[in-house]
Every structure is written in structure tokens, then in C-alpha cells.
Length: 293
Image (cartoon, rainbow, N blue to C red; front, side, top):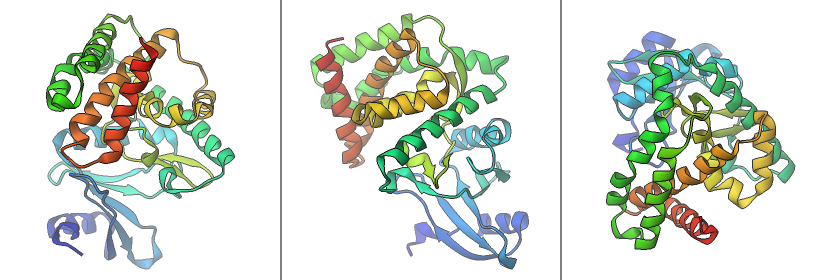
């Protein structure tokens, strides 16, 4: 065990004040910068909990808000529930849900389709769960514009990893995103990749550190860029669970957002050695070019 995997004494003391004596600690952090998560075993045979230290103030605020105000709508078997949080430690104590990440499982095709169908059901519930009033509606209504206006920063970070023709295409799609009319708004998971999709025969979602208010279609970008491209049947399964098809405006927004996501993949993936992320970004840009949008 490395020093980075050890549970800091201050965090351990805080956690024990909330849940009682801790009998064992297991580091279950992901292999990515800023991930610090531990599984805590408790005495007396009580169910264990997870202790998550957020990567920063914004991530902590997003996740703690999500667990208090929207995630309970999914139910205790479909998403972790908040035990307690600490702004001082930027930490959350969370209940466990059954299952493992779908990305780590080799399941039959029918089970995979069912997992995605249920994922769509849960996203529909989540999108409807947030209190979309006041500043939250403003945040949601400006989400696509904020994404589009951040394209130059992403392109600068990606540098010459994005070819001139790709750059022109991405800039055009970002401009189109600014001109789209109003789209359905809701409370987003914000990171709806298969790694956060838990399967036990039932589907659950974890990791709400990027949860926020926005355009509902934004939550489908990760699947659009990966699973849906590989197997269109997964798209049908998700939307069947979600309860509606996407409008033509949402479809076009999805295409535009995928271009921004691809540039982000190249900007982050290359310097951080994430080859899978780089391949995903390049594949999305290649598909967009081939479509000659």
C-alpha cells in the first residue's frame, strides 16, 4: 500500500464520529488524478460505507447538492445515499449499492440491453428530480452556450492534436450550438459513462461529482460517443427506458456536443497517457468528418 492510498487521520477521525468504529479500510480509488475513495468496514456486522474525498470545492459542492436534492429520487438500490458530508474535509460518506461497474463485466447482450434500458429510466427520474427554478433554471438554460463558448480553450489545450480541418468543423458545430433554440432542461448526472453504471441484475448510477442543471441531452453525450456508436441497439434501449425519443434539435445538439467532447478527450488524454480517451476522441472526430455535417 502506498502513502497515497492511506486514509488520512483527519478523515478517519471525522468518519468514525459519524458511523462509529472502523474495522477495515480498502482503497478503491480510480486510476485517475484526484480520485480518493475508500471502502470502510464497520463493527457489529453493520453495512459498510464509502468515504469519498472530493477533488476540489466545486466537485464537493456539486456532489453534496446532488445527494441531498436529487439523487434520493432514484432510490437506495439505484444510487448511493448520503450519510453525512463535511465541507471542511470536502468529504462525503455514502451507502453502498449492489453490483459492479458494467464496464468491468462480461454480460450477455440481452442483459446489457436491459442494463441500458434501466439506465434510461433512472436518468429520466433524475432529470425530473431537481428544483428547476430561479438560479437553477438560469444555470440550465445557459449550459449549452457555456459549453460552446469554451471551445477555444479546449482547442488551445489540444493544440496540434486537432488538425486544421477538424478545428474548422468543431468551431462550426460550436457556433451552431449557440444558435439552437430552447431544449428540455433538467438535473444531470453529468458523467454518465459505463464506468459509473452499476449492474447487479438491476442498474444503479454512482459518482455525481459532475452533477448539475443543464440541457437533458447533455447526459447522453458519453453514450453517444461510445456505446451507441458501437451498438445502436443500446441507444434504443436507453431511450425506451427514458420514455421518449430525442427531438431533431436535441439530435443536432448531441452531434455538436460530441465534437466538443472529442477535443476535450485529446486535450486531456494525450498529456495524461489515457490512450483509450485519445482513441475515443479521434474516433468521434473521424465519424463527424465522414458525415460531412
